[in-house]
Image (cartoon, rainbow, N blue to C red; front, side):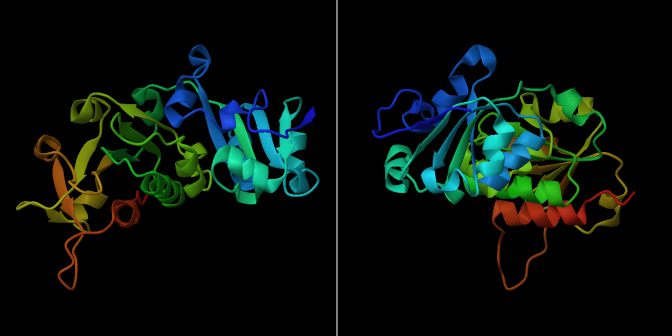
Length: 267
């Protein structure tokens, strides 16, 4: 693989790591589904293990024969741009985690029915825009037995660099795609729906009837407003997490972890 030392912020080829926004990365080379950035050797290894295609590496000099050596060897014949830590921080706008970034080809977007075909427990992320929460939800989903993740189009892209990093690569471990037709599409794919929300008819998350549902879609709402009223009204169950000390709610990522564990498939 060619090792290319850069000495300026305008070196040809590094714009994918610097000047392109997340939205531009998604559209870059659109015919090939765009690009995403994976950060840190651990996350890059998880992405490679999941079959994602590397396009270029950006690596601090000192890590070429250190933390990034295995990654460089695995990625084969792709350009490896390198430079001093301070220059790369100025280029990207942040200090690299463990000194390495990898630009990778975005995967083709799968269909909902393909993602959910064998799933017993899925989560629907509705309107969650915070990258940290998205990453944390994916990490909990992978750890706590969620078979697939669906997101409404107004949610944060799971392949956002920060979301990927917070998830520690879990976005590559759980199949996911975008949900365009809401509750109707969930029902069409055989799921009973459970909206996580406070309402007059909410049932407790430890209600026995929820554990016995063969295929359950757990719907999580935005950090501030929660789920839309029409989503709550159309759901089969409205579910709450009982609170102590007059606390009214949990952060969406924390609530998701509780829901995933309590509502996991026991079979």
